[in-house]
Structure formats: C-alpha cells, structure tokens
Length: 161
View 1 (cartoon, one colour):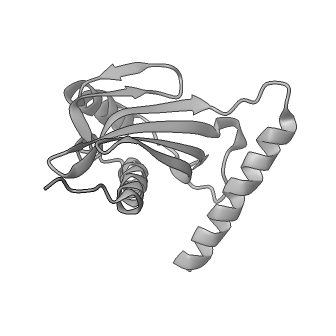
View 2 (cartoon, rainbow, N blue to C red):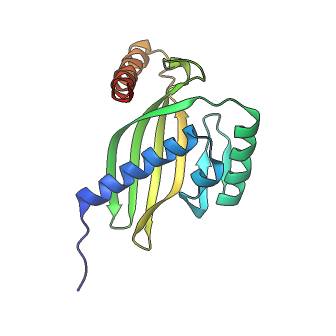
C-alpha cells in the first residue's frame, strides 16, 4: 500500500526546516546549521559565492562566524510548493538585524530559495540560495518589503517581551 503524501504536513515541515536554518545561523552554529543539508548540498551566498557539500559549508561558515559579527536573519515564507512527494521548493524573503541593533538593514534584504528533499522520511536541504532584493529602479518594492519585514520584527519583539 502506497502512502499518500500529506501535502499540508510536508509544506509545514519544509517551512519549519527553513526557520530552523535561520535560527541556527542566528546562533552562529555552523556545524548544526550544515547538519540540515544533504551531504552534497549547495549554498549560494548573498555575494554570489558558491559552496558545495556539507563539509565545505561547515568550514566556510565556521570561518565566517569566527571572523565576523554576523547579523541575525528574520524570514517570511512566501510559498512552499511540493514538486513531487520527496522534493519541495520554498520561496522566502528575509531581512537582517545587525548586531546591537533593533531594526533591519534594508540594504541587505534578500529573496531566499530553498530546495528540500525527503530522505528517510525527513526533509533536508539540497540547495539554499540567498539573493539580494535590490529591486533596481523600483524603490517602492524595496520599501514595501522593508515594511513587511519590520512588521514581523515588531510582532516577534513583542512576543519576546
């Protein structure tokens, strides 16, 4: 008997996987962060750098966390779409709150894409891409995204008070 995929559950699990990725970045835990990836998973950084494989990702992220005060991510999932019972794509937008600050830096807002695969009944990241949300020549789109992220930041801040 073939198990019918539970689309709502899978979409929620992929969304939680993304939130866990951001949480582990925010805690600056390279090893724990890369544990969320397939062994041959890929990352495309904000600056276009490409990292291939869990081992390389762990090394690069460890160096980043050791040498830089990284900003904290705040993400909003826009869509999770199952491409098959074992492959999903997640689209999100994200802002970053610099260390010691309480507001996002609009200059580093991003559009993020995550491709997840189901392995041994668990969702894991095959690809994560982080693209600048530059919106060249369309400042109203940048302002709209910044306000949307600030609303989530305010909600999150109020919940933590």
